[in-house]
Picture 1: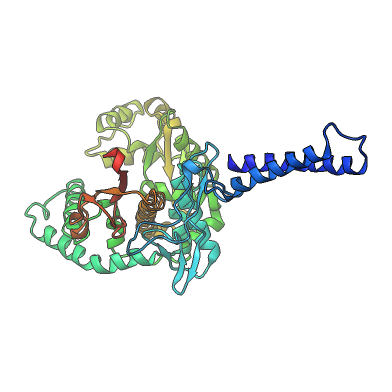
Picture 2: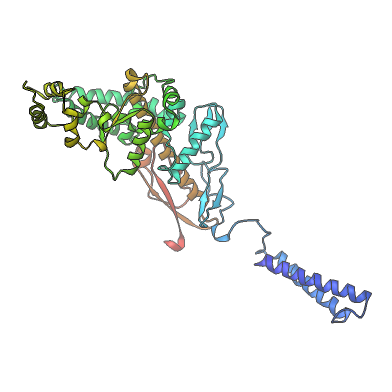
Length: 441
């Protein structure tokens, strides 16, 4: 407002000055005497002077909207975030844009200036930028429309140094705890395969909860041995295409298994269609008959044997499938027994049939790595934003929502009157900070 006032005063003063000069040259010009015109000019310039010296005056573009301006300094803390970048989006909402990736001696910082910096172990700026871009898509809620992060990490087999440090510290204790839980389980040895899978999930969760830093069981693949799959992702991309590789990877657990997808699952159907076109998936009647027969119950198989005039009797499901596989008339009858249009069957990538298990383990690892990186990045960004937008010069009360992942998280106070902590305190930490003014109570 002060700036508009200044410009208005100077504009009117300039006009009066021109009139004064014109009347001085030609007395027939103008509508007021020169002396009076000069006096008006003087008054406007005089009034403009105090306006520019007013403490409320700010030059144009000196700062953004006063209601959303960031403080010029931050609360005094041990690791004050640097290089912050605040801006407004199309709706006028204040947002925090993390600075670009930054080269270090050990790789690239993905989120420089935040409360917990993540270092990608790569010499390639292009790879670092691709990783950062996909994390930002996730942050902006675009993870369904944009390509996921895990396939990029798997393709280039890049690691995060801070997460590597966590793995180095916790991998052996995790494996020792898991081994002990299995050894001390009286039911384990005689348990069936499905029961062992269920028990293993419980043991993994218990083993993780016994660690100094207790994250969710989603990160378990990071604490297990990683097979050598160097170059395999590139082979898949060369044979089937980059898009197919990125779509295929999240469904890796279903390789050589039937997937039934209803018409309501539009995104999954879209993915399956693309994988069919990329020769990584079979649909309906193209699925091997022996695989389709496995979807039937023993009762259904017995009826099908009778309908096909097969006179031998099956003692088990495997016997029934052996009798029916390739028998005349089976294909036509399966159309009425199974929803073939909803059935999809992922097949191994070209030339990698024997490497499927290694790829599955590797992709589980990189999927867990992607989740941990995105979670840590998000919490660091949120807490950094709250630190740099805290009102300057006001008495603040800082509230901490602790995730209780470790002893350090558990020891955090609920309220801080000054110098709040700056989470994340470790990779995967979900602790958040909030500030309140005295007026808010």
